[in-house]
Length: 139
Image (cartoon, rainbow, N blue to C red; front, side, top):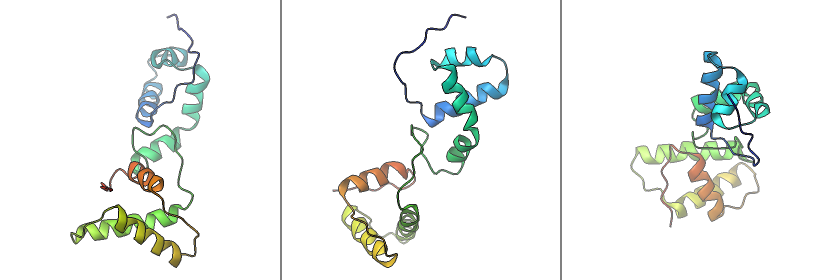
């Protein structure tokens, strides 16, 4: 099977990485053939295989959306975890949670935790995208 090497770097979604790992585990094709099938370099495939535990953990515990391309965590993950727990409690008692309320609560939590944090619209958008289980409607 002739494989055409790709010139540009191609970001791979976590769901695609999981699919690649299932192909590797099936052992029906060689690693070179799997790399050609998905249009990636063999070194990229080996990196995915090496990070197998991280990819499966990221997808299984819901920490990252399947469409994510990078597994970066927040600078203040504990702060976001507390906020996420508050959002879930607020939603369970049918309290409205919009962008303004969320920013105010985030700043309040940051003060209680003694963390210097400035909540911006960009942060709110990233939080909404990374935490897929929380639909937050802003503005």
